[in-house]
Figure 1 (cartoon, protein in one colour):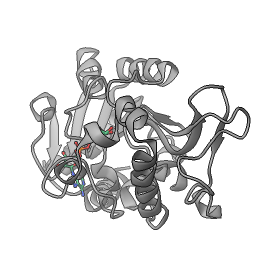
Figure 2: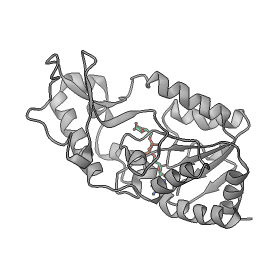
Figure 3: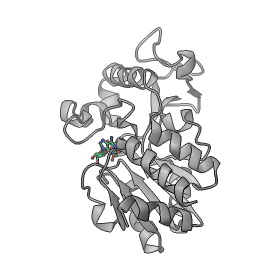
Figure 4: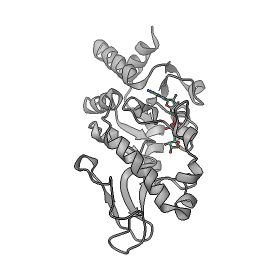
Length: 251
Ligand code: APR
């Protein structure tokens, strides 16, 4: 039995399947990953762009980088990995997507239950009051501002992108929900993550400790590979297309 057939069988036999996605799930949409050969952290220093200290030091520089990323994401389309996960949810084969990604492509592909562990790049949040605004890229929102860094329309303080920076806590509700799903699932489909950043990287281990079978879809070996029951060494979009074919053939 091929790894793909084993993965399809595990998914069909499962009561509850959950996906955990990382930057690799959006790579086939043309969105750069963070690590690996063309990774963003090879070109940029995260300490200069993705920490509260960096924002305090130079909010305009941080905003320029996030607007550059928003533009790339706005020009991108969900790929078959996003679309098939949404289809699996629609057909009752997937409970939820837990994502480390901030690009919103799972939602654009039609996924309903998406737990965003690291926030969403399209949200603006005030650093002082509780003002926040979710921009809609499909209406061209959030791609440019009259002034950089933009200011809160309510209190005049700085706005920031609604993402989790290094050294910041994850949104507590999202983390609690993700851990509950990890404890309760029978299968976790781990797609496109290096497993380098915790607590997201702990979720597959929690799932396995609670009896779940783990499936990894990633062209490379990762820090999590040794926990996996099935490894599909392929890019997410083609792998999900083949997995979906296999599931439909076995159903
Ligand atoms: N399909 C599937 N996986 C892919 C593809 C692809 N087409 N291309 C690359 N990958 C894999 C890489 O092999 C790597 O294992 O995706 C993974 C990307 O790893 P990272 O860039 O580290 O992304 P991620 O694991 O999501 O990073 C976690 O780190 O910088 C922070 O907050 C950021 O959410 C991010 C977190």
